[in-house]
Image (cartoon, rainbow, N blue to C red; front, side, top):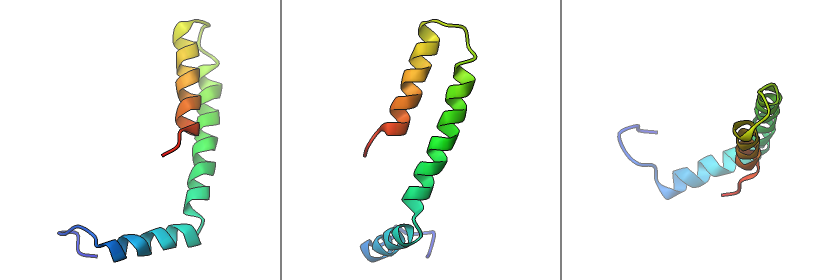
Length: 67
């Protein structure tokens, strides 16, 4: 693809098909879950308090948000 222009609808569809064919979304979700679990483990080491609870809530929210 030419980097100097926007992609066409056909090119976008081709990229979407490739992502789907190679399970890109599933792989990305698995990776997000892995790093989120690591973040939660790290956050749990913080002292108890509002900041810790807020970070835990936001971390979970970001993992489970939908588009």
